[in-house]
Image 1 (cartoon, protein in one colour):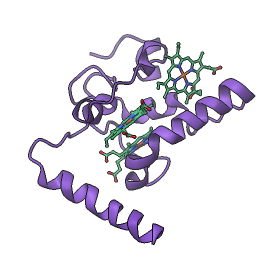
Image 2 (cartoon, rainbow, N blue to C red):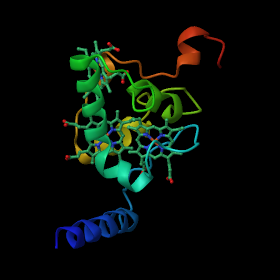
Image 3 (tube, rainbow, N blue to C red):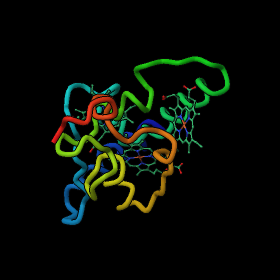
Length: 122
Ligand code: HEC
Ligand code: HEC
Ligand code: HEC
């Protein structure tokens, strides 16, 4: 039963989003392959990030792959290198729509590493 419910949820959410005309269209960024499949990420990225943060901050375990930095490396927009600078910036597009406020980027870099070091990207 539980499985059926989650299966239905998985199938319905994208369908609802696809039907809405005002659906957010986050700028995915660079591309490549996400750390998990997109469907799983849509529903679970917050747990992944929180788990990773706790592991790092409390136990000192640093795993590159699921780090917030790694998300930014791929998901920063190709136009401005940022995940938050525009309305459709990857990490804000859905959140605005869902009214979820995240303050992660007050401390964590919202830009790709390359532009943090060199400012030659126009
Ligand atoms: C190697 C590049 C790469 C990395 C690293 C990466 N992603 Fe992704 N991610 C992608 C791509 C490409 C997609 C789109 C895949 C698709 O639509 O099939 C995606 C999809 C997603 C989605 C679903 C987006 C949507 O509109 O449905 C979420 C949420 C997400 N990623 C969050 C994250 C988070 C959080 C991290 C860090 C823990 C991360 N990603 C790391 C490349 C990456
Ligand atoms: C007050 C500053 C601050 C805020 C706000 C903050 N963090 Fe962190 N975060 C840190 C510090 C400091 C570390 C430890 C960095 C280290 O030791 O590598 C960390 C580590 C992490 C890590 C593991 C290391 C990495 O690079 O991924 C993740 C994941 C993470 N935070 C996610 C988040 C998320 C998600 C949010 C927003 C909900 C957030 N943080 C908000 C300061 C902050
Ligand atoms: C496909 C849409 C989408 C994308 C893209 C997305 N998020 Fe989310 N995120 C959500 C939704 C929806 C929730 C709220 C889930 C809930 O209500 O439990 C959420 C919740 C969160 C939370 C938990 C907030 C809280 O108060 O507990 C964090 C942290 C988070 N997202 C971080 C990120 C980061 C960082 C990125 C960019 C790497 C990102 N998200 C990209 C849709 C998205």
